Image: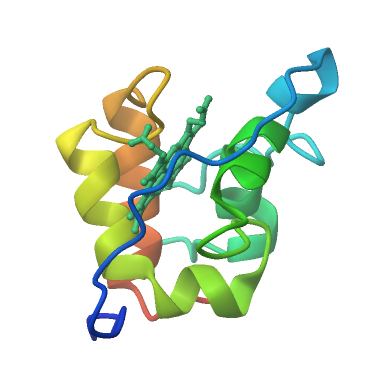
Length: 111
Ligand code: HEM
C-alpha cells in the first residue's frame, strides 16, 4: 500500500477543535453485517460505518474519514494507527474492526 506523502512537516500533530454531541458517537449509517470469508469488503457498506461522527470531525484537519478517496489514499497510515491502538485517541478499536479494515485495505480497497 502506498504511503501518503505528508510533506516536509510530516503527519499532523495539532489537537483538532472537536465539539462533543451525542450524534458524534454515531456513524452516518448502520454497518452492513460483516462479509463472510471470501466475500468482498466494500468501503460504503462495511468500512465507512466503522467511523463515528466524532472520528470524522476530529480528523477533518487531515482527511475525511467518510470519503472513499481520502481513506484509500491514507489507508496504510490509518491501518498503522488502528492496529497500534493510538487512534481513535479516545479508545482503541476491537480486533474484529481492525481486521475488517485490514481485509478491505488488503483486498483492493473496493468502493
Ligand atoms: C493517519 C492516521 C491518523 C493520524 C496521523 C491522526 C492524528 C491525530 C492527531 C494528531 C490528533 C490530535 C492529537 C492527539 O490526540 O494525538 C488526533 C485526534 C483524534 N483522532 Fe486521529 N489520526 C489518525 C487516524 C485516526 C482514525 C482512523 C480515527 C478514528 C477511527 C481517529 C480519531 C481521532 C479522534 C477521535 C481524535 C480525538 C479528538 C479529541 O477528542 O480531541 N484518528 N488524531
